[in-house]
Length: 192
Image 1 (cartoon, rainbow, N blue to C red):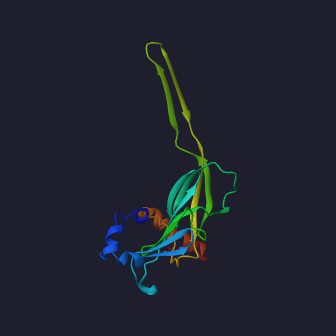
Image 2 (cartoon, rainbow, N blue to C red):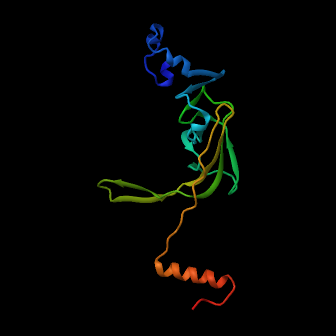
Image 3 (cartoon, helix red, strand yellow):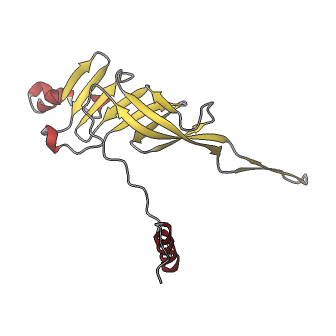
């Protein structure tokens, strides 16, 4: 059982009392999932942020808030929010909930950001000594999903605030023109 948590061969030392502290760190949250406490800290001193490992589109993805998932083409609308409930593992810096096989009350909310084509892949076929070559390009249709929220009833999740919008810096002349345009738009004569 302990190998499932990446602890190696811990079962023998537990019987002798050498690693007995590990049994206090692993709790059964519900039938079918296990909670591993990494460190005991007060609620105020916990660093925010959570991650989840989800099963989506036949593959597993480790996601946090704001991440982008590249998925195959889906029949969805732009801006639509989807709820992914196949969460295999959910964790923070201090605790981890391991699903067996899924964490029952965990959800990952994603929003559809973009539907586009992937980078071109060149398929080149050559038959030696036959004067036969074929070159063909292929671009698959993809859907980009952005992780909006990670929700769970088993863990108290404190999320980091969303990242601020990037600031774009213009060359000095363009920046001065933009500032003077803003002043004229405020209602008044242009400053001379």
